[in-house]
Length: 266
Ligand code: ADP
Image: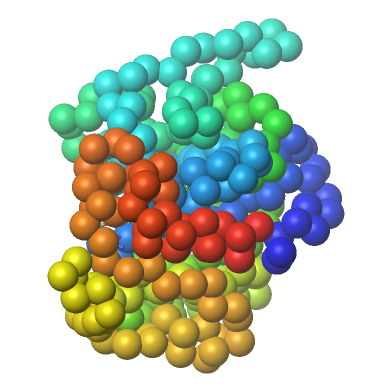
């Protein structure tokens, strides 16, 4: 249990949210959104109240991963203020720019518009009481990251990388951003995704397609916990595309990987 200390000073920003966990990556395509979604669902399966905020304004994938594309949030009156209700699916509250704009259109916004969308997600969305709010960050280090760390008291960040050198080099930059003086977000640890592949007909074999142990070494280098490795599993990819994330499935390897991750983060 690394996070259950709960926030010391919830203040006025999201006072009813106990833990705000940012899921970050340096490079795109390493499985950050897949990890964020499955982590949210794994925490919910263990009985926690969970929300996920898709802060990836330019490439929102949460609506597809949760199978809620085309759904539109309702408004709700809260003490005389109109608030946006997240869409609830599989017991998790979801908010994404993909639920507010036409999905077939690319979001082509300058930084200030993207950051004001993020501010709305924090101030105008009715999250209610949550044990965990998972923030699915955009890849890299940019405007949105700065806005978030300046406006939201983030409990800690989970960094996702593949073991590939180029992904780890970018993950390192992300970790350095969190450690910078003005930002100073605790790094909860590193998750290695796409660690290896095991073919069904060779269940004892592990093929280290993107390299071996990179995530673990990165964690050691930064003296942060290694939170686990997630193999390449076809059902993880299929679950994301189908809107029924892998942790909800019966495929035992991926289910265990995400439940273990949640136990290490919680
Ligand atoms: P990111 O958020 O870092 O851009 P995604 O979560 O969108 O990455 O993942 C990129 C692609 O890789 C998606 O198609 C996803 O389904 C797939 N994927 C991610 N992790 C795994 C995994 N462990 N096994 C198989 N496919 C994966």
